[in-house]
Length: 161
Figure 1 (cartoon, one colour):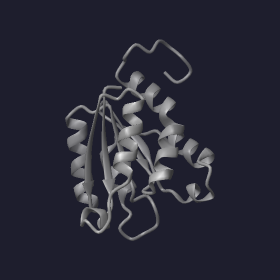
Figure 2 (tube, one colour):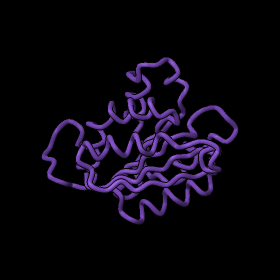
Figure 3 (cartoon, helix red, strand yellow):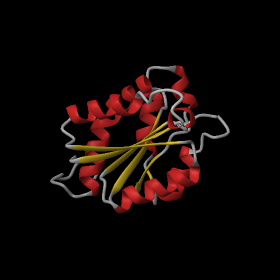
Figure 4 (cartoon, one colour):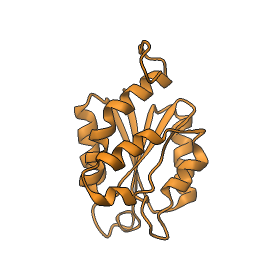
């Protein structure tokens, strides 16, 4: 996978009240997996703004878009709603895996979704940096396969095609 767009949602970090730790942590890990380009956006928990950024990332042709934050029960946690307005087809198995194998009981409280928009896979991750890193590490083999199949990049057959 050559590029990933990473969107971190945090009202406080976007106002400069604290430093975003998810973006550098995930960017570094993704580059370690061979991703050449990681673009990032930091924005407040705003459903409309997120929806616009997701649509722009899909239009730009990113194979994978990751969101961090906004998947909980807070009144401004609307990442799954914005994502559902953009995706054409859900891919629930990836989030089911993350919730089941995430290693922390609070993973089951996540409302995260995953799906396909055009040639792009979109996945919601936790807003907690360590949890987001665990989640992407767990999901990476599935995401890599899903993107390759979606984009027909040299994947020959198999149970998930």
